Length: 196
Image (cartoon, rainbow, N blue to C red):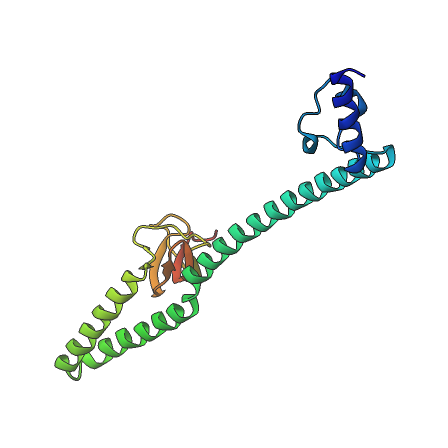
């Protein structure tokens, strides 16, 4: 037996002792230098590995889908959290504007009796309004406006031929906005054409 044949035979024995780390074809071609790089498998083992690889790919795809859903949920939760923070004070601010109304009413009523006390209440109202403005609460403008059901609440109608239909004649109670939401609509008296 030639030297090359002995080497191949030795490689073949080594492979059998090491549970077949290379194919016979690789041994014959002399490509099985590093026996740990190649493995000899039975068809059943190969098919099992193929099935495992397929399941592994399916699991990876499932993981990616679940991860994407989780990321979307996280982003949605972040947006909702910001909305809750932004509008968490909505009810409190609504109460604050009612208290401001009462202070303004008190200032008007007391002015006839005690102008100095009325001035003090007006200063408090001014500070209160400044605090609300800092929180992005703004009074809804009504001057020269036509009735808008999204912003106004009509509490009275007066027949007037000198004004366009639906003109705001008088503000009965101020209305306020917080960011882009209505805290309270403006209660108004509006015009109506005679016989219309």
